[in-house]
Structures are given as C-alpha cells and as structure tokens.
Length: 154
Image (cartoon, rainbow, N blue to C red; front, top):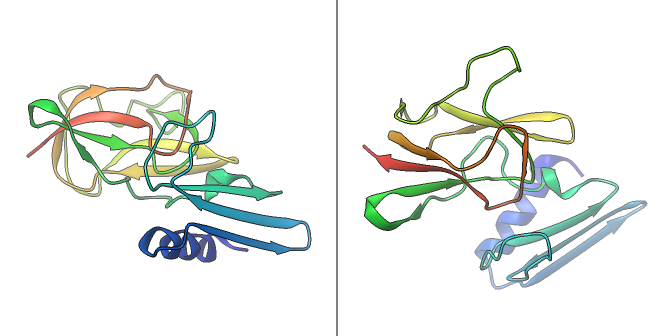
C-alpha cells in the first residue's frame, strides 16, 4: 500500500464514526484505531493509532504538513509532530537551523525535518508566526502529536 492510500484511509477513519479499520494483504497488515492510547505515545484524543507490518507506523501521518495547532495560554499555539520519527532542526549537521527562537516564519516555510524510515519529511508552518520556544532537542525521537514549537500567530 502506498502513502497516498494510507493517508486516504486515515482521513476516512478520522472524519467518520469508524472506530477501527483493519486491512491485510500478504505480509502487510494495517490496523487503524481511533481514541486509543499506546503506551509510548502521548494521550491524543481521537487521533488514529496506526500499526503496520512490515511497514512502520511512521509513514501513516501526513508528511509535509503540520498537525493542527492547539491554542495554549497567553495566545500562543503549539505546532505538533505530524508523524513518528526523529526531530532535526537543520537539513544536515553542517547547516544552519531552519528556525531559532524569535524567527518570524511565513506560511509554508520549513520549520524542521522529521526523519521516518530514512525519509526526511519537512514540517512546514500552516500560518505566519513567530517562534517563541523550541520544545524538542535536535535528534530527539518524537511521537505523532508531540509538541515541537510554541509559536505566536502574526
């Protein structure tokens, strides 16, 4: 199953009353469940939990889009990880970071990279904002829905 089909399945599950979807073909198995908490994952209400073998769940979430931002105290919002993977602040170890605290970013500008299964997935801003705080360390593992940045919408 390719990533486009997987995204479509996740969208169907999250926008309908379906609470569980299971698909199996050969050695590949995909299970999507809504509203369940996995031991290592943060509690995220109504977020799909995707298990796949041999394909890892890291590719199950939208790739180059930022998860919906949540409103936080003081008018700030969080930008969350759209996938499971490893958080990187720069495109390579020798490069400058994409953003720093105080950086004003435009809609569509790259904020960081999440590496999942050797694929580098750019996380982009959904709106113009100022970076207030970077909540993850470089090369730190992240789960789906983990807060990455605290931002002030502009």
